[in-house]
Image 1: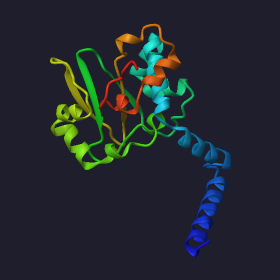
Image 2: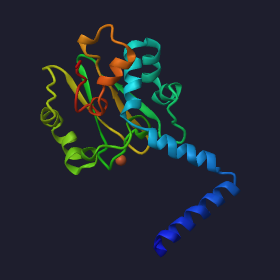
Image 3: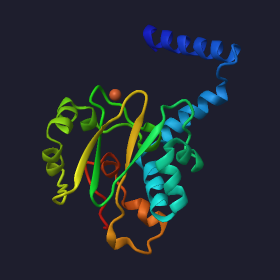
Length: 193
Ligand code: FE
C-alpha cells in the first residue's frame, strides 16, 4: 500500500471513529448509507412510475410529495433534497436539466448519465430543447407544450411520463420494466415494447 493510500485509510478510520464517538453516525448507519447509495438506480424510479400508473392514490401522493412517495416504497430519502415529480400529460411534456452542474435525484435514478453532466446537454436543453429531443428520436406532437425544469441543490426533479396506450392490463412489474432512465428525465418517452 502506498503512503498516500495508507494515509487515506487512517484518515477514514479516524473520521469514522470521531463520527461514532460524537454520536453523529455509527458503523451500521454508515454501512446502510453505502448500501442505499449502491442500490440507487433507475429501477427505483421505474417502480414509482409503474405504481403511479396503476394506483391513483400513489400517483396523487407522488405528485404532491415525491420524497414521501419514494419512502413509502422503501427507498431511503433521508438527508436528501426534496424530490419533485413533473406530471406529463397528453398536451404537456417536461424535460429536466441541471443548468449549473449535475443535480439529479440519485436515490431514485442512480448516478446521472454522462451526457446529463455535459455542457452541451445543459446548454441545449435550454436553448433548443425540441431540437435536442429530436436527436433522441423523441417527436412531440404539434401543440404539446414543452417545459424545461431546472434541478438544483435544493430541489431534484423527475418526470412521471405518460403510460403508453398499448399497456392496458399490464402488471406493475411489467410496466416498470419498460420505464427507462431517459423517460424519467424527459429526453425519451416510454414505449410499449
Ligand atoms: Fe447541479
